[in-house]
Length: 298
Image 1 (cartoon, helix red, strand yellow):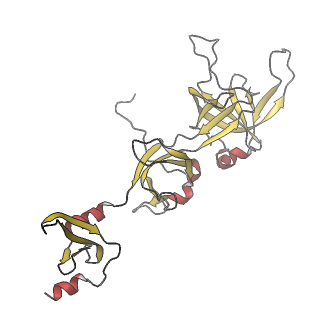
Image 2: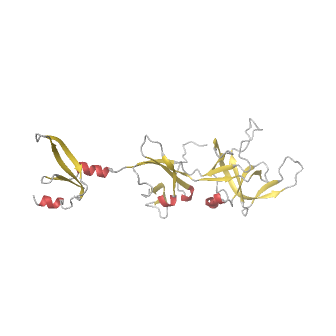
Image 3: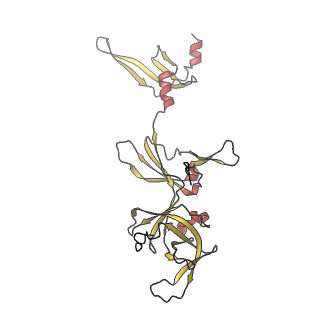
């Protein structure tokens, strides 16, 4: 009997082949996303972080995300989603085990090209915890219908002679050398209150989506701007010098390197009375106005 609280949440340590990353671009928050949905290769942008105290172990749940400048080079808003990778395939059969005919499951072909990145999962219980979502004939996803894989084993078909014509002659037996995989899902048994109602687990040749449940999908919004916080801080708090002879104002960074320069002047009316003060960014920077040299000459 349990007398305390137990938690099951743990930081993820996932293979990058089980992750997929997409992003979209919008020039502003008020505008509709422009262009198509783009894909990033997780192997190029995600890097696991090593644990500082445990040798040869990564720090679970912490990954470095690198955004390539070739993809993120326009001012605006980028919406990035990092989610478990989805594999679309077809159900080969919905059958039972010859030794235990009460157990019904989904049979998949491990040799299908779209499942090549799942080959390391086609071992005994390798797909346990993955979920299956179902697609309609038109390719749309069946809303709110999914099944959790509770067991997965390689199998092969066996033929049996049956007296009843309503039963299938092809059943399956578990074997480590089979090219098929037998998946049991939950729920798959009829509830006790309605024993004739069998839950849907799929149909032959129906398209399904297989994905892992190792982590929740993550959504990030990244804003690309012309100036960052450091640039703003330089403009507000760094050293500045105004050259009275030519009206140049020089802005230096925090290391006293020339960062930007401006022309400052007044516009006079016909009576030589100042009417406007102008601050205009210079197209070229006068590199001769070194801060340390100017200060040393005072």
